[in-house]
Length: 184
Image (cartoon, rainbow, N blue to C red; front, side):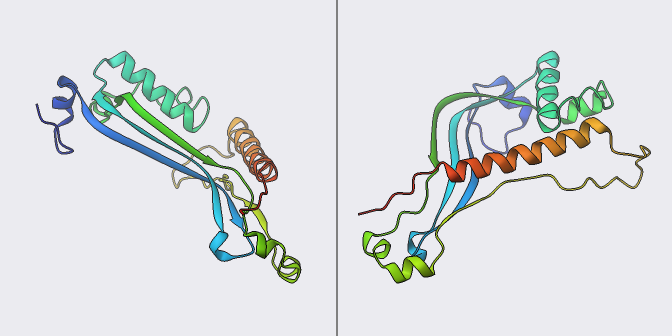
């Protein structure tokens, strides 16, 4: 069977799978050098290639849905409406990916300027160089128009606070740990 992006999910479940490529990149810092041509980013990226099939077993599907939901916010699956309705289960598809190949790349360094620029004392005194940490954080929660809970539950508030502190500290630590070498 030839599978395309328009192949129905039920047909994919019964076949050998659909070839997929999954790519993700996370920016960790802006790398600012003496010359704009030496600016860069610190980042982490990964590419996975494999074969996806639809998870048809109900227990495995619930297990995966629980992991995904709790990956967004710990214990969220357990504190929401459960079990899912038959309509929710029918309208949600979970794909299982058998990874065939994978690659990853990380840049976690300081700027790399040309030696002649680094030796230019006037330029070095005039232009700030280094890494500006970039991190993703959570803002102040905004209740829905139909929310009936008067205050944000403490477990959610504490999770958001801890994650914001952790993510900021991780970004700063990564920026300070980079190699600040010079390209010759």
